[in-house]
Image 1 (cartoon, helix red, strand yellow):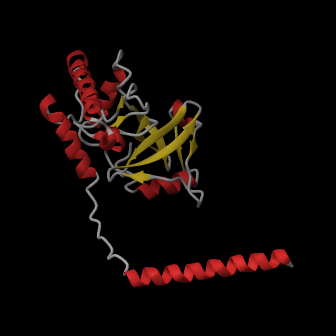
Image 2 (cartoon, one colour; image 1 turned 135 degrees about the vertical axis):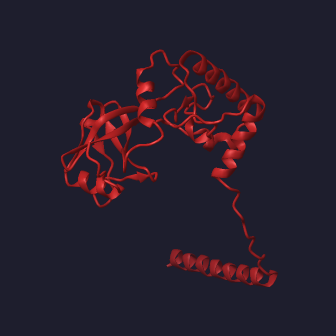
Image 3 (spheres, one colour; image 1 turned 120 degrees about the vertical axis):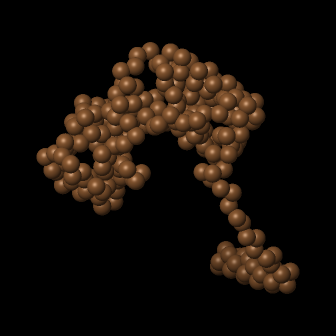
Length: 243
């Protein structure tokens, strides 16, 4: 791989649009890129990578293309994740591909995620009852301890955006974000509050400025005008019927 990385998301977008870039892994090679009204690939940036969505026969995939050399040991963590077998269904791990994309005849690594359906815990947390939150936290703690014991696998920390709840009864849970650096996960007594604090950070309570109430005279005037207009309309309809 060359030292001068693409550097910007627009480089990837323009090269893909001009067929000067291509993905190689079998799971996305024949996929269809999501495009915008200008017929150029749509992309979402994170500062260190740019992501594209592709429709494939196996479902939708999200592909992370790096703007520069990946840091924080992400390659080693992803390769470790890919080698694990027997992971619970709740654990969703990405796939790392060295040389997964070619840009201007040079190869770069990519990270491929299976897009998860349904809302995240961040979407549903405000509407969940305390009993439901407690149930989810109990399952999370069991999963966390099991993964640490059997696979030496540690999560990035409590982030409600990384937990998907596609089932209305909370029977199905999918946890993503395992490729991120391990975080400081609080204990059972603090996890619920940590999740709610995190949600508040993500969605701060908006400041609503109340409009001054309309004056009674203005409202009465509007009502009289509307009544007069309605009377005229009815009279016109009657006249047309008679004619």
